[in-house]
Each structure stands twice: as structure tokens, then as C-alpha cells.
Amino acid sequence: MHITFFGAAQQVTGSCTLVECSGKYLLVDCGLPQGNDERESGIDLPFDAAAIDYLFLTHAHIDHSGRIPLMVRNGFKGKIFATSATIDLCEIMLADSGHIQEMEAEWKSRKAKRAGKKGEEPLYTVEDAQKSMQYFHGCEYKQICSIDEHIKVRFDDAGHLLGSSSIEMWLEESGEQRKIVFSGDIGNFDQPLIKDPDYIDEADFVVMESTYGNRLHDRPEEAKGQHITSLARAQELAEIIERTFARKGNVIIPSFAVGRTQEILYLLRLIIEQKLCPTIRDIPVFVDSPLSVKATHVFAGNLFGYMDAETMELVNKGINPILFPSLVTITDVQDSIALNQRKESCVIISSSGMCEAGRIKHHLKHNLWRSECTVLFSGYQAGGTLGRSILDGARHVTIFGEQIDVRCEVAELHGISGHADQKGLVKWLTSFKKEPRRAFIVHGDKEVAPWFASYVSRTLGIKAYAPALMERFDLLDEASLPVALPVEAALVPYLRQLAESLAELSKQEATLRSVVERMEQAGREKNLDEKRAVRLTNAINRLASDLEYLKIKWGPDAD
Image (cartoon, rainbow, N blue to C red; front, side, top):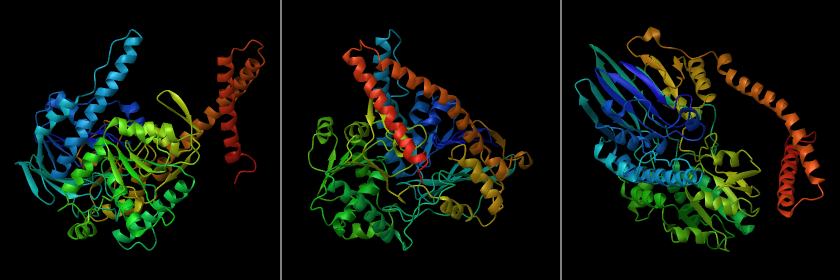
């Protein structure tokens, strides 16, 4: 009985874990890596898809489900188990992902052909995504599904997304029995629409996420339930909208099409219903994402058994929790383009949530440089993504090959994360009546996952370990299983990164002097043509702007 970590191992995205039991190959999730994770591990499957017997899917987000069509394309013929809501969402999300793969391959192929190179094939197509749906089988919450005589599973509500699950897995091999619990993405408390996470009380081994293992979310002190918490979050969003509209700007919200968009619509309905923006008569809201529109319809049709008590109370009163009169949904490309010609202030919600693809990039191109506008982030931004660069304070970004100045207000909607923070993770892990034999800590980057594993070992007394990519362990040989590094060693990646950054800074100091000298020399040339002079002026201005920003942040008078 072995477990192998093929994804989200000291990474945040690309969830994929293989379990071998009694001659069967069981996969839990098969997601697409994103940002730095993709650059580090690639997106090809690190196993034979045709050899996989069963796949158990925790939820529909692409970093958990996005390589399922690739598995089908590569020969997978097994069964995929998920909740019915997850299946409904996958039907639209995987097709959308297939469309993105096709469009990106077409764009890269055109570029390659202009350079005399061979074109590029998409990772998978819309047809592959549609074909993959025939392998899905429903397994509802709290229902024990007997896969065969050696394997049973049960899905529990993870409180992260419509249909999201933690998975309990009972395994038997050579007369030995083990129970593994996969946390999936553990949800935050008091989220709009969906229930809080279920807690499980028994496991031999736990595979759990750690996205926010070293952080605590901002939560209103007075929060005593979903309604009060949502009202506080709605007030925060209302204040951002009020000050942006007062500047005659737009509020641009990069949002994950499934889950986060619907939560923000819930908050906007509250703002309008409770008149939380008293200075604004009308708040035009546009959801500009075909996938978001489709997902919203799925949410509206999967209420019973998935939504929380507050949401069901609204439904029973005849109130749609995520729709309101000033909401306009956009699917047509021309209507999307027209949004950036509007003179009146508005709220634009568009995907993707990390700004890596989709229509959001067009809206950022037209609004980032406008000081009156606000770009509002509402979810995790993985390292190496455009969203992370903007959130981290980049002064300029490149979109569609064009450099765009970042002059707008950049804000973050606090407490709305779909992931549990450290407190929530600890609450979930300490729900087990008897401590597990081992906790494998995944879904955290190279700094967070090892640190959280050490934290769990030190403070909870549970043996924990953050596996690296491709690590494989025998679950029947407990003596061979690793333990977390001590806290000093767990902190080493931070110190190593700092040392590397300081060395790079020292190295680039000479480069900066060289660049300044070259600019000065070029500026003294007498026969500069207009095009070169303009380019040189822009480059000097950008460098001067960046240095001024650094002076404010790190200079002698900085706080």
C-alpha cells in the first residue's frame, strides 16, 4: 500500500496524489499547476493515465480537476467519483479549460509559424473535456461507496466550494487495513452561500492542505455567524466602491468564475439591499465571463443539500441570493469590449482570479493606468502570476506585449478567502479523536508547507511531513515514514531565499550603474531619431519612477 505525491507537494496548485492498494491505482485529484508551479513541474502527466483504475475528485476548481481531459486523451478508461454538484461544475469548467487550451495553442502556433517553426498542439480540446464527462459517477455526502472488496470511500462537505469534499478512504491489502483522509481544500468559516466544513473524527493517515498554514484571516471580532460576517465583509466592499465611484473610476474585480464570483454577488446584493453605499444611487455591476454566467446558473440549481441555513432561508422567502436588478451578465465579446468605452463608473467582475487568462486582462489593460480606478483582489494569488505581481506592488506590468503603468488603487477584500486559515486548519486537524499516525502536509509552497508540518508536530504532537514532488511512501511500513523537520530547519528556506536575494542585489548593483551610464551616453547622442528618443525617454522615466518608489519605501525617511 503506497502513496505518491505527483502534485501540490510544496506547491499550491496541481493537486494530484496516487494511492496503490491491492493491485489497484487510485488517484485523488488531477489538477493543472499554475504560475511558478507550472514552470517547476510542467503540465504533462507523470504517470500512465491508462493504468489508473479510479479517480476521486475533491472539487471542480481547475487546480484540482484540470488535467482530467488530458488523462482521457492519454487513455484513461476508469471511473471518476465526485459529488453531483462537482460533476455539474466540471461539465462547464473543463470545457472552458479545453477552449482556453485550444486558443493558447492557436496563438502560439501563429507566432511559431511566423518564425518558421512548427505549430503547437493544445494540451487537450473541448471535445476531450466533453468526452471525459462520461467517466463521472456521483457519490453524495455521507454516502459510503464500496468501490470493490478492498476499497470504500465517503465524501464529506469541505465547505470550500459548491460540492467540495474531503474524502475518507478505507483500504485493505494483505489482511491489513488503513484509513486515509484527504482534506481537499478546507473552507473558511461563515462563507456566503455554502456550509462550514464537516469535521472527521478518525484516520490513520491524513493528507491535508496548508495554503494559509502560516496566516490568520482578518475576521470581524463581532462575527457570530454567516449573516453578521457577510454584512461586515459587504461593508468593507461598500467602502471601496464608494471611494472609487467618488473618483469617477471603475472597480475591477479579478475573480474565480466558480465560487468566488457568486460570493461577491451575494455581498453586492447585501450592499444594495441594506443601502450600504448611501452616496450612490445606482451600482451597475457587470459579470463579464461566460464561465461565471454558466456557473451562476449551476449554483442556482444546486441549492438543497449544499447551501447553508441563511441562504436557504432567503430561498424559502422567494429571494434569489445572488441576483439583483442592476446586475448585467455578459457573454458576447462585443459587449465585453464595449464595457471599456463606458463613461459611468461601474463594478466589473471578470475571470481569471489570478489574472493569467481571460477577459480580465483586457479590463486591467484599460484600467490599471487610471488613478481613479481600483483593482480589488478577493482570493489567493499564486507566485509568478500577473495578479501576484500587481498585488505585490509592481509599478509596471506587461499585458498582451504592452507595458502598462499601475497607477490605480490596488486593494484586497479581507476575510473572503475560500481557504481556512491556520486557526481553521488546526480546528479541522484536531477534530480527530485519536491522533493520526502521520499527517502529510500539501498545498502549501516551499516555505509554508514545511513550516506548517513543523508547527503541527511541535504544537499538536501529531507526526507531520511536507512531501516533495514524486516522493513515495509505504503506508504499511510506519517505521519508514518521515517526520517534519525541526523548526530551525523548517525556517531554512526563508533564510536561504534571503541570502540568495541579497547576493543577487549585490550582483545587480553594478548592472544598475552600467544601465544608467548607457542611458546617459545614449542621451548625449546628437543624431537621435524621434522613435529612439521616445523609447529612451520612456525607459528613463520608468527607471526613475521605480527608484523613487524604492526611495519612499526603503529610503532613510521611510517608516
